[in-house]
Each structure stands twice: as C-alpha cells, then as structure tokens.
Length: 282
Image: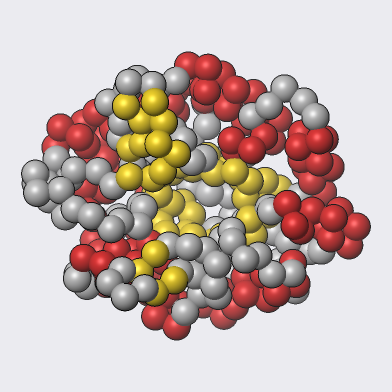
C-alpha cells in the first residue's frame, strides 16, 4: 500500500500572486502543491516558472478534471499530457477528486458529487486503476464538498469512499474542511465520517477556509481555517499520524507570509516524535 515519503510535512498551494515572492525570497517550505492542469502545456512561461520552482522545492501534483466518477472513458490526450508533467515534476504521488463532471465529452468544470451506489464505485475504481497503471505513480482521491444528495444512493459518503479505494487499491486525499462543509450541509456527524476512513490509506490531508451563507456552507478557500476544522484535523492526525498536509487558499489570496503563517498552525497538531517535520516551515 502506498505511503508518502517521510520527509513531507506541511505544504502550501503554489499560486500566481506568490510566485515573485517565492522566487526572490526563497522561503523555507517543505513542498508545494500545483494544479496539474495549469502546467499541461507545451511550453511558455508557466513551465519556465515551474522549472525554477522544481530547482529548489519538492512538488506534488493535484488535478481537477480527471472526473473518475463520470461514465465517459478516461481522456487519453489528457493522460498523455499528465504523464509528461509527472515525469517533469517527479511528483511522488498524484491526487484528484472523487467526483464526476463530464458527459459525452462535454466538461462542466465543476466537482459534482456522485450517487453512492455499488455500480458507481465499481466504475470509478476501474478508472482509477487504469490511470495509475498508465501514469505509473500512486493516486490518492479526494472527498469533495457537496450541496446536494442522490435519492438512489445505497450507502453513506464515507462508505462509498471506502468501497472505491479498496476496489482501486489507491490512497485517500482527506479534505477535512470538505468533511466539515458537507456535514453541515447534510446534517451528519463529521467525526463518524473521520472514524470510518481507513487511516492506513490516507496519503495526504487538505485544510482550507470556507464561507457560510444562509442555507449552505460553500467550500470557497478564501478564509483562514476555522476552529472546528482544526479540531477535525487534530483528530485526523491522531488517527492517521503525521500525514503530509496542504493548506489551500485560492480566492481573495493574501500575502505569501499570511498564507505561510496559516499553514504553520498545523505544526502544533503533528506528533512530537516528528521533529524534522515540525521544523520544516521554521
């Protein structure tokens, strides 16, 4: 079973407003997460900047358009470009979402929740296995935030997640903010979800902020992480150990230093037996 390298601690999402600061100041960061689709190009400035980042930092790729839950077959051209980027970055693992978002080759560019059925789990797991075989790198799938549910579902979201990863023999990118958001939108106990997740399959954790509206909470990634989500993170670390953790901040992005400080808050939740990890962002 896939285990992430031991020297990955707390990472930050690589975002355009921070590039100049990173390249000029060279801050000490354990690793950066990149959105794969932003760099699946033939050349130009994005790849030139990425190569400069790769000279100094470790990078992990995070995708937003594999749509493992869609009925469409995997896009071969997408996989070809993705594999070229995997070879360029030498990412030790690859992540994408447990969702659907395409029909007959048309893409919604959204991360849509799935019906939690055994047939959907079977189809999704088969596509994850196909992608892992082709890309030759471990894959971890992320639980998404959701705002609607399917009446045809045969199990809970966490049961579905477990069914998929066991069938696919892949890892989990555990987004604790998404668990919190969905728990508030659908009225379930987030700790029941966390306790049901197979700890040995959690390869990475995501942290982020969200926005509260009148009826729903939206996963907007434009605020600091709130207290209840930090508590969920502490529980996840207690169950899973010092898993590589990534802070996402994708809208109304503040200065690099502010994002850096927010990421460092995760350090106090990591096991004291991990001194090398704790010092990564010092």
